[in-house]
Structures are given as C-alpha cells and as structure tokens.
Amino acid sequence: MNILDKIHETAVSKSERMAIKSEQESLTYGELDAASDRLAVWMKQNDPEGTTPVIVYGHKNPYMIVCFLACVKAGRAYCPQDISIPESRVRDTIESVHPSLIFAVEGEVSVVASEHAGRIVTLHKIREIVQTENGSYDRSWQVSPEDVFYIIFTSGSTGKPKGVQITTDCLNHYLDWSVNLGSTSKEKEGAHFMNQAPFSFDLSVMDLYTSLASGGTLYTMTKEMQGDYAKMFAFFAESGLHIWVSTPSFADMCLSDKKFSKELLPELRVFLFCGEVLTTATAENLRARFPDAKIINTYGPTESTVAVSDVEITDGLLADTVAGGKSLPVGSAKPGTWLEIWDENGNSVAEGTQGEIVIIGDTVSVGYYGREDLTKKSFLTCERGGKNWRAYKTGDAGYLIDGQLYYNGRIDLQVKLHGYRIEIEDIENNMVRLPQIDHAVVIPNVKEGKVYSLTAFVTGTKGGQSDHEFAKGIKEGLKQFLPSYMIPKKVRYLDTIPMNNHGKADRKYLGGLVS
Image 1 (tube, rainbow, N blue to C red):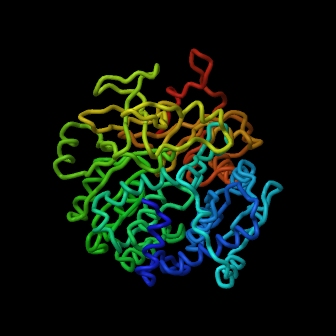
Image 2 (image 1 turned 90 degrees about the vertical axis):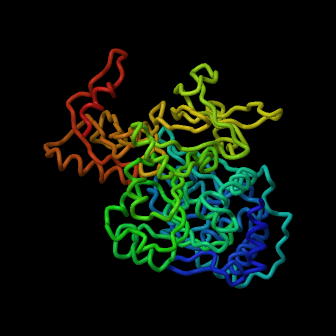
C-alpha cells in the first residue's frame, strides 16, 4: 500500500466524504488532499533547500494532518509535537532536529521559537497558503520508500528525548496489516475511527493512518474533552464510532462510568488496544458491556511502527487465561515480521523460556535521529528467509508458546504507563534539576504485570515544609521539564537513599515501600 496514493484515490472517488472531524472543524478527503498539495508546493518554493525534518506543533487540529501530508508530499519527514509537552522538552527536540521550518498550528509561537529553529509558519499563514497557492504539485517530490516519513520522539535515559525514524515503507507495510485488524479492509471502508492519543504519541498512527487508508473518518478527542465525562460521552454518542483505538488505561477510565456500554456506542465493532498491558479484568468488563464488539490486543514499540502482533480476546481465550492464572497473550507476529526471544548472549531460547523480545522485519525503524551511538546499541541486521532485515532489541521481557507472545515487562528501567513509554532515568535526571533535590529514585507501582503509577523517593532540602507541601512543590516544579504523564504520582522525602551491596540505590527495597 502507498498511503499517499490511497488518500488521493479516496479524494478523487469520494471527495465529499469526511476525513477528519474535530471540535474545531472538519476536512473532507477532497479538502485534505488539495490543501496538503498546495502547502507542499509552497514548501518547495519557499524552503527549496530544506532537508531537515519539519516540526508540526499543535493539538488535534485537522490542519496538523494537512501539514503532515504536505511534508511527506514535499519529500520531507515531519515530527509532531503536542502542546501538552513542556516547553523545555520541545526545545530539546528542536535542538536535535534543527528544523528549517516549523508549522505552529496551535499554541504559543514563543514555545517553539529557538535559536535552532528556522521559519515559523502559523495556522493563519497555513490557511492563507492553502486558499491562494496555485502552483502545480509534482508527485515525484514525495518521500521515497526508504525515506523517513515521520519521527516520534520518546523518553530517553539521559533526560533528553530520542527520535525514532519511521520510513515510508515501514508505515505502508504496517498499514497493509492494520487495515485488517479486527475486521477486513472492506468492512472498514467508511468506518468512524476514534483518535484518543495525541499525534506526538505513536498510538495515534494506528487510528490516523489506518482510518485514512480505509477511507474512514477520524473523530479526534481533545485533552479537555477527556477530562469531562459529560463532554466525552456526548462525543461518543455523536461520533457513532465503529473502531475504538486507545490504551487499556483509557478504556478503564471509561468503564468506571456505567453509561459506557453498548447503549452509548451501539455501532462499535472493534476495540484495538496497544501501548500497555491489557488485563483480564479490563477484557472481562468490556466483554460484558460490549458483547458484540471484538477485542484485539496488540504489541509493539515505537521502533517497530506501532505494533507487530495481534490476538483476538475471545470468551474462550479469556476463560482459559483466568483459569490458568496467566496474563493475556499479545498475539502472533504480523506478516513480514519475526518475533524471537533471545538470551543475554543473543541466542534464541527454548519455547516457554523468558528472555528479551527481538523484532525482525519490514516495519523496524532505521534508528534514532542523529544518534548513531544509540542506534548501534539497539538495532542490528538479521538474515531470515534468505534476506537481510532490520532488527530491534526491545528491552522487553517475554516468552513464546505456540507462536503466541507473552509480555512480561521491562528488562531495564523502562516502563509503560497509560500507554506511554517512559525511561525511569529520564524522570530521575530531570528531578535533580530542581534545586531542592539532591538524589531521586523513581519506582513503578506494578500490579498483575501492569504499571499503575510512579513513586519518587528523594533526598534534598525541605526548607521546613510539610511532606505534603514539599511533594506538591516538586510536582509543580517538574512541569517545567516533563509532560504530566511522566510526573510521579507520589513524592516521598527520605533522609538518605538506601543502597544495595553494589553501592547502587536499592530499588528492590524501595519497591517494597510503594503502595
């Protein structure tokens, strides 16, 4: 599949079909295709020598999608940044990319202004361009199969985000598979998809591009809407959703209200989950509330283009899992992918034996933007089926039984919380940037293999504050450096950090203090 060709085909055959619908406005396929063509022409005329990725800054505005497509139509990768990301972190990304062009669709322009940034184009200017530009778009400009299509920046252990580069081929191979997840591509034709995740989070690729590849309509949900049950449930009722894409945690939040059921979403056909562990409790609740909808559990890191495995959670599988006291599987490998379990020496282990999950295949990233050192640590080349493929060592623990993958958490200090991949050391390095903290150790609160929250143990200067006042101040201070999902739920002050026999912070002991 070529996603740009697919969007153009729908724009020609079904020009008036709604492509994206948000609180702010909506765009048809005809409008989306034409607007992105015109913006691509403007880019070639006004930034002809530009080769660096383009930053697209905003939150759920349909014109972010116009910018995404314009970039790749002009032969440039794009890098989405949500307005909820702290200013310092956006600047870190800009320093990594050195963009010659930034599309500031929403938010304060001052946030993305930087000595390392090039020209900033606001939404007002973008609208003017797509209404007046009359140059001719040349399809030969668009990104080639091995060109980078987008870059998603994820948490890095050094305290600086790292950019995962996904090529056009990676995305197209992923879409060949994702359009058939839970239902066939024909059944998805014209379906209504839910977009819950911000575009800076790779889970959004599952809904955005699968919807566009299916000729569907994407209904975007704002952050404010998610914080108001009345607005959120009104959105559900109005959207007539067919395909649900979210983390399990978001579904758990919705399930806390009894109104979240088939009566609210009578047309819902498929739940697609990715980003974190799907528990049996969540699956059981969904089966009870939505007996006619399929539940698809998937697995995959950003480095392998969203997801690489899937399994339908049927009543039989759920009953067997509960009876066996096991966790739910995350599925078997998609076509074009091998899932293997390696030991610490890089050798495959026996079936049922735990080791590191290694992904080999056609959707593995080409590596981290501008970080060859990090790329060499995690990416390699493997020969399978008489051909060399890119491979990614995930750092995830797991095992295989009868081709089904079971995920057992992180080997290192990386966790998944509410679908976001977080490097524990990233939080710790940013916590010690606060003047009142000398040492910080962050511990995840894990139940049934799922991370529910983070607790930070810190030493430093309380200045006569109560524990509550001190913790509140720390959380407030961290907003300068970290997005909200990375800020520990609890902050506990200690006189000293306990050490183990190796002279390192005793994370095992501190884990026993987490509740």
